[in-house]
Length: 458
Ligand code: GLC
Image (tube, rainbow, N blue to C red; front, side, top):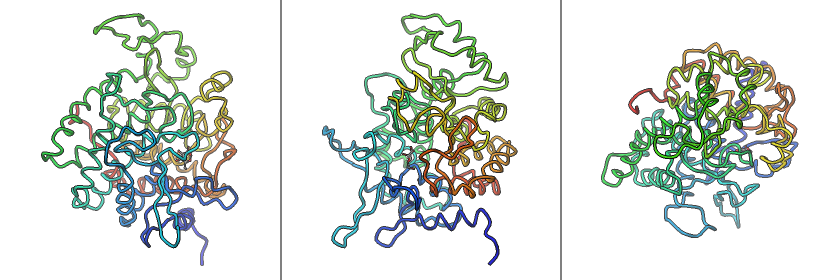
């Protein structure tokens, strides 16, 4: 037998991660590291499975995706309750595992009731809708999507997200640590990563919901939400030189409907001089969070890349985001694509905002660490905008290390030169992120599974 290519090695490792329920493949474990304590890495995380699911669809293996969608749908509570010890109606679990008790198999879900920090998985249901749409496009199996349990599943997710709460913003309000960044990181409120996925799931659900009596009300609500959500994100989260100038000279304490500085952002809270120096003239990006007197200027990769993929960012904005990645390559990519969040919180900020979390110390893990899984989103975003050279470059950087380092979960240090301090090896989404990036660059027609068109919304 000849020497295996990087891709063959990744496929061989990936096949071992598949988990079975009643003899059917239903998902993949988060990591299969022989040298580390499993903790909850022996579970199938909804968010971790997305890149695996897309890859299986592209490779003509839709059964595992179908089984995953069906089994996770069964875990979703369908009835409303006022009991905080039960997961809310519409919520999807962060993860699940198969347990065998007295010879019988059970699917056991974690809705944040077991998770470290008891964090809420707000992103899981949004990713689920995204994968369902990809499944429908890849297989043209609309029968599954149109089944009443699937239509109900979509509906209850949307109801959970669209429900009016205390605020009157179009964005969805979530607790801190409610997404891939599942530890305290100052993302309470309206973090971009969640808003981008919220936008994705609204766009996707308009394609998936049948225009019938039971769906009429929710379809109208989705349509009514998309426009203000898009405007708020494109305008108020946007940061480029022009916007920085506006914010710098903002009036404060404005009262009433006509206020320009709606969120009463105080100029002194923005690191203008650092930011003006860092942000290239040709660049721009969506800020990390927005709320009362809060504009979090950190760059978050998932929110920005998914904004390009979904057309939440318009064409000009999408190019500007990619310009930032290209022109600030040594900060955002360097030795491994790419930073989950930039820059890191340091010193007092780290202590106060993360709760002095040692796993999230500066330039590690979620706090300025680099995650190879993001390679597929970077590749998709770059390819969509006709900038394949960026994707090729990023893939080449990743390829130099991933196999040798045994597919680490994340990398540390400002230039991503160190394998993450507590990083798992043979992390599944590191492998699938890489394999998916290779598929997307080899045959860009696969982009149709994940991208959305411009227009039709505004
Ligand atoms: C960590 C990550 C989370 C991921 C999980 C499994 O908890 O923060 O995003 O889903 O590991 O890989």
